[in-house]
Image (cartoon, rainbow, N blue to C red; front, side, top):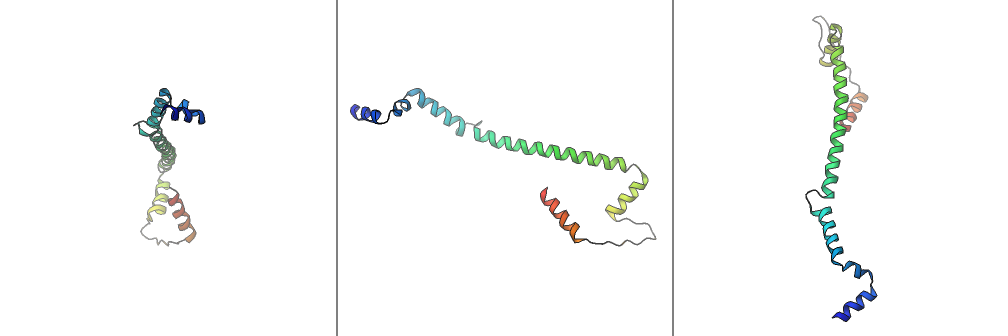
Amino acid sequence: MKNWYENLLLQYPFLKFLGNKYTIVLLFFTVWMVFLDNQSYLEQRILNKQKDELEANKVYYKEEIAKDKQSIKQLKNLGQIERYGREKYYMKRPNEDIYLIDNEDEKIKDSIEKAKR
């Protein structure tokens, strides 16, 4: 039995290093930390991806808030309120007619922009 082990070590000298108890414990610890632990490397990668997505959302929403603040600032003017109501909600004065013109290119661009979000 011992002769077989010695022949194997002579043939493959790296097995002497792998057979060391400290190496075995270190390998076990490494595998445990990378794959099995609650705070494993794989879990940390997933959490970092989520964090990056949330930070991107944060930047997007800050930009949207800035745009909305600018819109609110503009809507303090009575003329702008009327223009906004006419453009967005198709409001009209009592003796007016409104004609809507559909533009296919704008619909395509709008659908592409919505898909990107």
